[in-house]
Length: 255
Ligand SMILES: [Zn+2]
Image 1 (tube, helix red, strand yellow):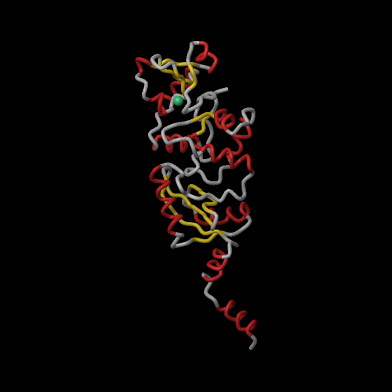
Image 2 (image 1 turned 180 degrees about the horizontal axis):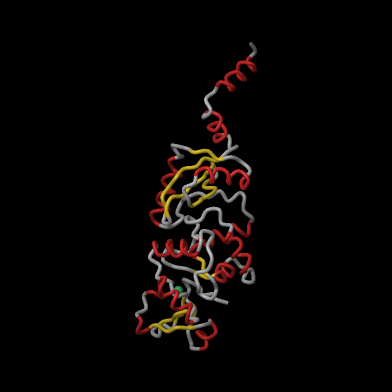
């Protein structure tokens, strides 16, 4: 029996679990683990470049079935994920920040990467409109494209696309539905009632009559202003005409 024949015989006899392990190690497949997130259980897939996808839900077969057509490779469950990745993931879920968690940006266009990296800068408890992301990445007219890039975010929760809201201040759509978006935002301490109320009244910016600085309403600086000193604006123009300057931290953009 030649070595090739022996290897072929070994491969044929090998337990089914060996093949996935080899595929994972050679990058021909991704691994996945389960985690609990702010909206319940999630599947987290990864490879040597980082986290490749996060899918909310509990249906294992559905997750595995949809993965391959989307990413062009299969996905297998892993009992012991790489310790560094597991630690960074758990910290990210605990702190609601991306932190040192590696993401596999490989399958994304440069534009989508820019949108998602910028989105990852929005702190928990805060939201920004699509127009803010567009302006921040140097493409202020690309508001719709920003919406599309966010709608196709393969790594929700850790890249917090739920923190981007409609330009009119309404929470807007979410892949898993507006109720899930609302629940995830609430879990981070976002004051949704106030946002709803402001959106209903057409208020998109707030300022302080002591500092004469205007902000996105959820900016940390804005939240320090007491209601007695808070001033509301519908547009940037209105704020500027009232003699207010834009906040350097949240760099308001509600065009
Ligand atoms: Zn601000």
